[in-house]
Length: 231
Image 1 (cartoon, rainbow, N blue to C red):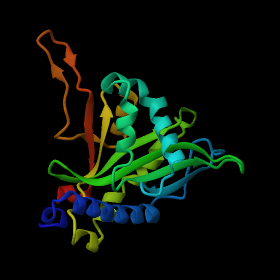
Image 2: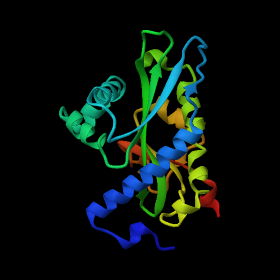
Image 3: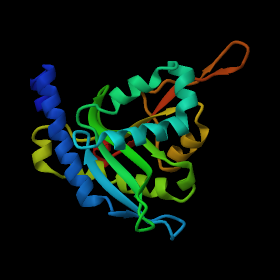
């Protein structure tokens, strides 16, 4: 099946098409994602704010970067060196990205960033996927089912988008949701596996060495397939 992304390959047009895909994604998120995430601690009131990368403020972007630093900064520094934040902030401004900001609205005066998700639609190898760039929660809000609830609602998106005939007239159906996880981040790895994610066929894998030790890659690529992937 030929799509618009097959026809036009210059970078300006591709960015325009990425923004178009982003428009479909944002519309589906606003239709399907709840206004509030239900936490285990019922006193928490976690409000969702869906926003595209062109509209996110510098303060919000920096707050998201701080969360990444607090949660994964040591791993990023070890793998990418002391200037990793410069590369990360560029990635966080990628064309077509959609952010879901999770704000703590438990009190009238509080609107703290409890966490965020960022994602966009892209082609990864021979798959068209909703790629989850980040899901980060402030440590004070972890273990409250906020992350698992967010992932549960996100999991319906590929099938919902694949029901949109206008989208399918221009782009490939989505094969699922894909993400990258550091091999050292065992907690995140178990979390994604519990959500139904499996290693992608394109993922780096562990290697058994001659001395029988196991050498892990820096990261794994995981995927949760949509219904379209089985057709």
